[in-house]
Amino acid sequence: MLPLPTVDAALPTIHRLLVRFDEALTRLGGRPSALELERPTFLVHEALSGQSREFHSHAHVLTLTEGTSPIETLAGIFHDVVYVQVDQGFPRMVSDILRPLLASVDGTGYRIGLGVLEDPATALVARIFGREPGDELTPLTGLNELASAFVAVKCLSPFLPPRHLAEIAAGIEATTPFRETAAFDRLAGRLRELGIPGLDANACEDAVRAAVRLANRDVENFAEADPARFLDNTWRLLPETNPALHMPNVYRNGEYRLALQRMEAFLSTLAAERVFHAFRGEPSPEVHARRIAQARRNISLAVRYLRAKLYTIALVEAFACATGGDAPIELFLGGIPDENNTNPVRAELFLERAPDSSADLDPVLLRLLEQGRASPSSFDLGASPYTAFLYRSFGERALMERLESTRPWIRGRVPARDWLATQACPPVAALARAIARVTMTRREALEKLADGMIPQVG
Image 1: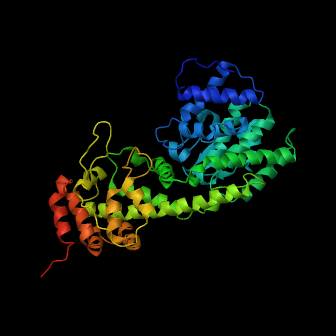
Image 2: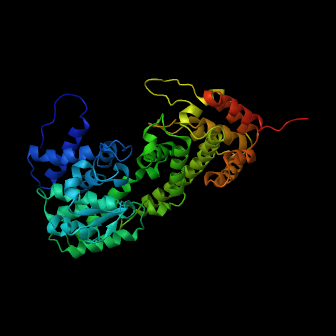
């Protein structure tokens, strides 16, 4: 075991990963030297340090593997090493491992090469995943998990026997998200077919139970009792698939709107039954049912939250396009507080509090909009003051009906000014006036636009 520092201070991330590797391998009978521990640790540490990683990071892996069995620990450490849509390809430190195994296909996916058969460890992984040379994969069909498992066994095969490598690969395969539960019966069948000494039918079932336990921990935020914490994790995923959001002072209204659209489209079609899984007693029926029910509530609330915000940003984007063209969101709504400016000018400072429109207000959703998610994000405000204003002004049903009206404008079938004419009313005019106070270069045009949205008396 590694000698730990004796001072009363927190270990840096790389040291915590070293300790996790050391403890897990020691418990499995592996005996790497101190220097041999460095290679897999450095590889994982660097892979998870990608600039675009907000959620799939060191913190996620260390939380996921806290207090788990050694097999789950090693599978959890490696399961996000490859995330091609976030890292825009294979991380530099694993590319040499993966180049003989996976070949890029027209920029749309990767094809498994004959190289996987040249190493018993990677051939084992391919069989566990039910894959063979010539198969083509994308991130939606298990590419990231397969590539991560290849990296795991290449790093760990010097220290562990085939049985443990198979169990680790099965754990990584199980983290392929949002599948039907029958996938785990098929995984158990593929493990049995390997005929590895020590992996009889009972051991295979135990391995899949451990894999399901890891997979459920990987998505446990879907069962958060606090919706603000669930939305925290949802928001951390946005920059990973929308690179423009990594520049919070630069991204445009339309880029932010597109990020919300993508997340809403995904969550609105996600069944809670595909989030959490059960396999032959893991977890208990009561725990499984409770997780599914909470996931269903969180998904539903997140979709409504996103839709409310989509209407707001559609308005802001239309204001921009109607007065000169889209521009950075900071120009229209003001700055996001940071260490250099903790109190930037923002349009919300000029927005009056809306009277409650009716009883058609969900207090949970209203609290999320007004008080914000559980913690700040790197690219956005935690609270949604503009959406809260519109939500109070219209009520939920009317706001959602207005969202439906945005589709022709968003799809480019209707000019921004024509669509805004259909939205004319005092609350929308008030929002335009508040934004005009911040958008110095377009103040006159926005104020004129706002004037046209209020019915003239007499």
